[in-house]
Image (cartoon, rainbow over the protein chains, first blue to last red):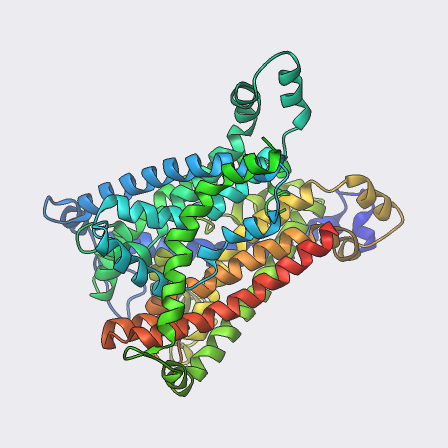
Length: 279
Length: 273
C-alpha cells in the first residue's frame, strides 16, 4: 500500500492497480447499464421469450402503437410535462422567499421549520393521498390538473426549500449589504444582487422538483386518475398487464429527461451549496 | 417591523401548503386509524398487528439494510473521488456512478424486474459466461430485489451529497496527515468521514424516508407476502376498501420514519449548541 504512494506512476506495480479497478468498474458498469440496456432491448423487441437471452425479432411496431392517436401515450406525456412545469413554477414562488428567510433572517424554531418540509417525504403518501382526494373531491379539485400540481408541490417543496436555503446561505451577505449602502432598497438589492447569485442553486432545485413531479405516481393515481392521465400511471398499468414493450417505451420516455438532467446538474449544484443542504 | 416577523411572513406561504395539503390529511388519516365503524377503538391496530407484524419487521429490516449499504457505498464512492490518486480512475468513477440518480422509482421497478428475474439478463449473462448453470439460476425478485432496487437508485444521490461535502473540506489537513504517512483508509475514516458526517446523515435520512414511502418498487418487484407496508396499504384500500387498517399501517410507518427524523433533529441541535 505504502509503496504505491511513492510518486512512481511508471512503476509496473502502479499499473497492476488497474486489475482491481477494472473488475470493480466493470461490475459497476454491468449493474448500472445492464438494466438500462435490457430496457432498450424491450422497446424494440417484437418477439422475445424463454429461454432466449436476446430478442428473436426486432422492430418498431410497439412505438407505432404508443404514438398512435388513440394510444394514450401522447396525452399522458403532455399532461406529465404541463404538471411538472407548473409544479416547478409554484414551488419556486413559494421556496425563494422561504429559503431566503431561512438562510438570512433570524427565525424562531428554524430547525423545526426546515424539518416541516421533510414531512411529506417522511410518511407513506398513500393514506395521505386518499384523504387529500377526499378533501379535493369536496372542493372540486379532484381529477383536475391544478389538483395534481398542488399534490406534487407539497411533495417537492423539501427539495425546493432546502436547496434554496443552501443556495442563499452560500452567498456572502456583505454583497447585499454593500448594495444597500449605496442606496438600493431591500427588495432591489435582493433582486439585483442576491437572486442572480443564487440562480444556479435555484436552477438545481427546479430540476429536482421537475423530476420529483415526473416521477410521482401515488398522488397522481388518487388525485388525477382517471381524468388526468400521467406517464407513470400508463407505465404501471401496461406493466401490470404484462405488455413489456409498451411499458418499456413509457419507461424510456420517463428516463430521457432524468438522464439529461443527471448530466447537467453539477453545472448548477456547486460544492459550496451542496455542503450546506440541510443545515 | 421586527426581522423575525418578516422572516415568518416569508416562510408562511410554503408552510401553509404543507399544513393544508399534508398535515391536515395526515391528521385525518391518524384519526381514521382509531375509527372502527364510526366509533373510536383499537380494532384497526389489533387487526394490523395480527395480519402484518411480519411485514412490519420485513419493512424495517429491508429499509435499514438498504440504508446501511447505501451509506457504505456512498462513503466508498465519495472517498475515492476525494482521495483517489489516479486522475483517469477518478474520472471514470465520477462519470459512472451517477446514472441511476434521477431515474424514477417506477422505472427502476420495471427495468430491474426484467433484469433480475430467473430468465433475466443478469442470470443469462452469468450463464453465457459460464459462471452459472441454468439449473442454479434463481430469481432475485424477492426481498433481495427490493434491496437491490433501493441501493441502485439511492446510492448516487447520497454519494453526490457526500462527495460534494468532501470536496469542500480543507485539503491542508488531508495533506498534512498524508505527509505524516497515514494510509488512505485511515485518512478516509479519521479525517474525511467525520467532517462530512452531518451531510451523510441528512442524505441517509432522506433516503430512509423515501424508501419507506415508495409503493411502485415493492408492487413491481415483490408483491407476495411478506412484502412492504406500502404494498399492504394499497392492497387494503384497493381490495377491501378498508381505510381503517390502511390508516393504522400508515401510522406505524410514520412512527418508524419519525424515530429516524428524531435522530437528525437531535444531531443538528447538538451541532448548533
